[in-house]
Length: 151
Image (cartoon, rainbow, N blue to C red; front, side):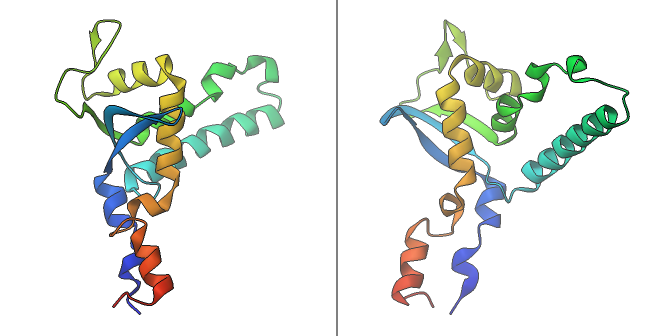
């Protein structure tokens, strides 16, 4: 059995263009999403854990209280999605905009999208967390294994 059909690392690093589904409807928008096995995402997660650990230690030693913590700062879901985004585009080549502002392929544009449309942020986090999206042959890699057809 060739286990390379389970290698999610390569596609996690390069990202996968994924058509956005908004409340079950496919939109003419694609997002290039990094997987959880991407080094960039793992580094981001480690930095986030270190920051949360520092806050927890400061509370434990009395240097901070719960009142000192800005809840908005602790809600990292926007930055979590930004860290997993490598690009955005429309499927028909027209510009992507929000309220007349053109969305570029940069961090500030991604933040605008994920702040303005939380459902797209949730979509990116779900897709990034599903390792089957990053298998070499997609989900059919698993079917090949279960059927014993992988070489």
